[in-house]
Length: 223
Image 1 (tube, one colour):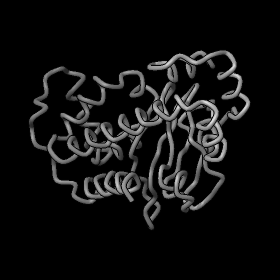
Image 2 (cartoon, helix red, strand yellow):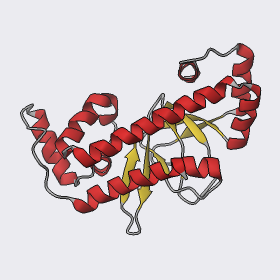
Image 3 (cartoon, rainbow, N blue to C red):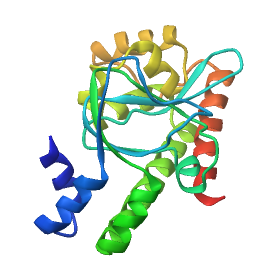
């Protein structure tokens, strides 16, 4: 699994064996059982995390206990509550395992130490932020301009391996629709005949909360 981290970090710059030893000395490796938390809102410690195995859901929790899911980071993806991690603010997001998972994590102090010793990692960090911004932009555009059927079809095309591991309840939250309407979409999709442009029934509460969560995440990048 460490080879997965190596391939991810070496997408643009190769690292020496000495540099990799420094990285592994600073990082921690954690196992997180299904349904257990990697991070909870308003709690610490906070890490930047690379998923080596398994998957998580990143979400905000409303006052009435309803989850609004922003992302599903799985193996070979990064996950981080950016504002809390970089600006030492209370965590806003919950990060919970959807299956037994393993992650490599690093604290901000340890990451800054690595930046001093391995300057090329700063360029990798910039690329990570760029990719994060692009993903947020695409997610927001999808929620604002695409039908629920389009969003579901896009999710299957982009993340076919994730769909099999995510519950209908979680996926409906991510898409901004009710669980019942998602079941209807899945039945139509299985028949390979539905019109993805067909308008969805109005679910303003679900959609508003989903979009609000995305804006909240974007705000953490620029404040």
